[in-house]
Image (cartoon, rainbow, N blue to C red):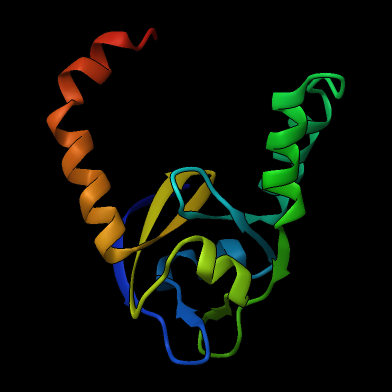
Length: 140
């Protein structure tokens, strides 16, 4: 399970160090893709497979499911951790997430989100202000 918030740097070659505590879960490989809200999603292979199965069950005849599949699958890339526990973020994904030199890695149970630090601060501030309204609309 991925949880927590971690701040790391993106080096000039586009490599991002991942938190040590997540390396064993990602050792078998991972998939990096465009996320929602202009972040990136990093899935361990097994969780990615489950997610793709859900996408495959969406109705292909409807525009929104096709667009979502393109967003998630079309931008996806297999990544592996190097000896230092880093992943290489391809230029097109780095541009999509507007990643600068500082990134925030968020653990969200079955996946990680990778954010540009400034973008995440803006998102977090907005979300925290609306947290009561957001919680009220949720059904458990």
